[in-house]
Length: 348
Image 1: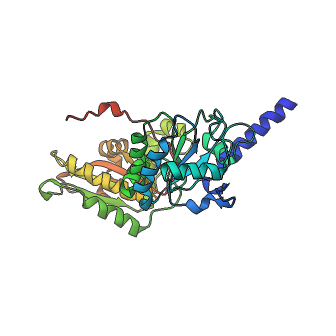
Image 2: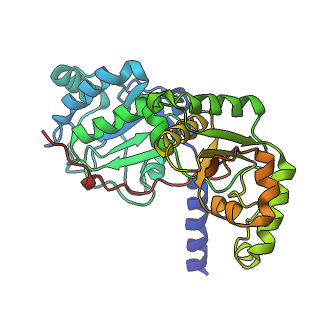
Image 3: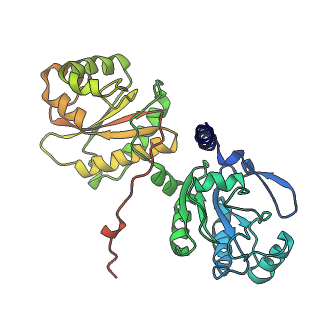
């Protein structure tokens, strides 16, 4: 019975932590005042557990340099001294603050000393580490403007790599690129016409060789048209549809789609790709989700029972459907998939 209660307690704690938001936490500053982290909404945060007598203490200099460089762009460093690792953060928070000011001239906010591991760990760190204990001083967590944990850094991780990630986050264009994921679950809410217009406007302003603009775009807002062609798809792919318990339509369940066409004889693919990427990133910046689709294109182009759908798109005879972008309000937040940066070489 005790074991069952223990398991239930752990499960409840886990659920509570997963439901929490970083802005729910309150901390104590170096003056003894309670501070809600909601004050940092909309900021890019780097949260660090520090010590003043550690081999990594000189990192304060790099942190201050980073703070000075990006603070005006909405970047904050939150410093939490911790004496749990080798007793390397002795003294009061006032002693620590005086040391850091005198030796590193820091300007980013420092907070009262806390525990980051164990039974007395601060709730913020219990949430940050997610069951994976802090190993040593100067472990860091990068937090996005919307309060998501983006990355954890160990003390030996290069500060230059951390700064590169910070640079990506404080720049709104770069942070949009980094935040974009393929979405396959959407709310039952069509995208407003004026927002779709904005997305497409961003697309058609993408670069185009010799300004040929060798593409045409069709934005489908007609829900019945999407439903009707989906019925054809369901009839022809019944077994596949049955396997997807969340199936709503053949376009990854999105309420709207953007169809991009290129010349039937070939060419224009690069320009069309640039067009699509602009639209996908514009959608991301406005809180929409997208997914680039090829499978539906093959089905629509090869099944004669879908001709009514293509007719409604009014695609010129010398053009063909190239790809489709599913677009809508997301009902999921997919995690980032790893990228292989070893494929990149700089030739100097």
